[in-house]
Length: 360
Image 1: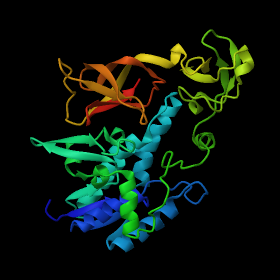
Image 2 (image 1 turned 90 degrees about the horizontal axis):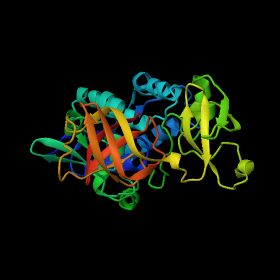
Image 3 (image 1 turned 180 degrees about the vertical axis):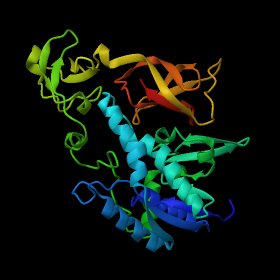
């Protein structure tokens, strides 16, 4: 690809650092931008924003590229955080990383990059883009254990056409090796985990600041009361930790799991055993669908589809029925564990990510 002006989202982590390094080595005019998306409490012990900014600046210095910080906190609050709270209030478990990519990194950030004369933007995602017959496809990253196409499934053709994911061709071990060879200051920095604006902080404490608590009963599917919950928003389907009920309540030693939430009665339904029938479902409905090609994939003869209903899951073969452009149903060959409303069901045809929707 001819030399161009590329704006890289530098997060302070090693993946985006190596992304910038590779593009600079290829002869591009690279500008590193640190996105500040959260500022409510970025001075507290759990928020790593300041350290991340310093790490990103140090990386830009070593690579020899211009660097600036841009504040998207207002957009983030409007487009990502407000939706995150709405979903939790409705008893669902949203995935803010999916929204952040669609609304901030590939919308607000992309718009900003275009105003400073960028031809493309690049991020440190483990994914790939392929152009075929004038259409852009999103492919899984080569390192299957790090593939992040799941989080990018809401991108459009216009966004994909301007996106570069240089480390999508690499394994994580190679990324670390390149960072070490180049003497990047964050070469050994551990990967960030958790939701960007919550960081490593206690989740309940964080939510409580924004949403009122509504404690209620914890009951078995048969209606027997076995405890009380702190508020439905603090629990997710398949959750085992933090329920506060031991296995002995019913005489069997099997651990308890959240199997469903009864919103109208504010009841948390729990059952014993990892493979309880209520945790295994062969079908799901999804809405608010987004397709990378611009239209729903074909579902005819010879089309082999698979889906992930959560990020760290292997692709599960399924059949899809579309209901217009924005809703669909999936039927899985094998029942799937702990399908969770609010999470994304993302479809694949082999290594090509087709898009997905939000589980109802």
